[in-house]
Amino acid sequence: MELPPNPPIFPPSIFLSFAGSAGHRAEILSATSCRAAPKLPGVSTPEVLQVSCVQHHWTRPLEFNLDRTLHFIGRAAADGSRVVLFPEAGLTSYHFPYVLKLKAAELRHALAETCRAARDAGIWAIVGTLRKTPNRYLNLAHVIAPSGKIVYEYAKVQMAGRDEKRYCRGGDKLALFEIDGIPCTLVICRDGRHPELYRLPAMAGARILFHPSCSSDEVEAVWWKRVSGRAQQPVGPNSRIFHCVANTIGTSPDGKQSTSGQSFIRDPNGLPLAEAGPYQEEMITATLDLAQADRSYVLDSLKSPPFLARHWRAMLRDVKARAQREPR
Image (cartoon, rainbow, N blue to C red; front, side, top):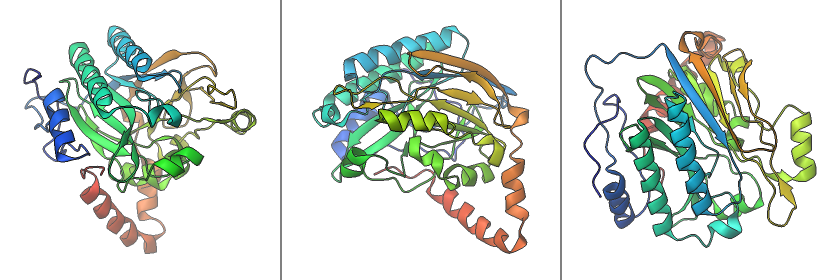
């Protein structure tokens, strides 16, 4: 099904990336009409951006997750948000015994429905899936524009947990894309413990970090994560960018694992603008004053100590060169 032409606000340097076989890619492209588009003339970068982050259960089936995704896309739009972020693997679930049985056609349908909902609501949506490739699974975040087109994808780099390490492999790029002309970046869950994965994109211009997560672990480990300062450490104090986290809630079917919830939106100082509880499904929302994201800490790192400057510049060239590659 073709969606009406309505290109997203996006610079020519941003290219669509979508993994999978040629047949798989053709079906997705047909379902979502994904393509890159030039930035529209006369459209300026906004000074503020309202963002919502959703947290929901991590082991529910695809049908349940799709229902909640469509619900919260509509709710975020009704509340005036421009972007809504969902948890890691929020569409497929992060429960591998279920995901391993999931059919590719079911996932393609769910993604197409999500794209359609984002188009109808007129907002950006960032959703997560676990998708099978010829070489294991990729843990993906899909950036869907208000046109209903998937305009960017990022594959999680740092694997976490026994099942993920067994069934998945890491991506080989850092995320750098734009939302309404605002440079942004992405990490997924464990990636956030590796500052280079978001500080390098911040050096390249990113002002917002979107951080979908599923901090599932044994119950005792989840409690220790909360006591020690949450599963996701705020990034503002070492970067001076905004940090938006969508985490999961609930226990596994066997009752052996839980997850920490506590999604948040934090300003470039690391101070909370909105926070969720540890146990319930909910959506949090905040308005970001983009002038605050001055990236001063990462810009200072680019200059001092001087002997590292050329190495930073070389890495940034590589980051920018790889940023638009398809996760394969």
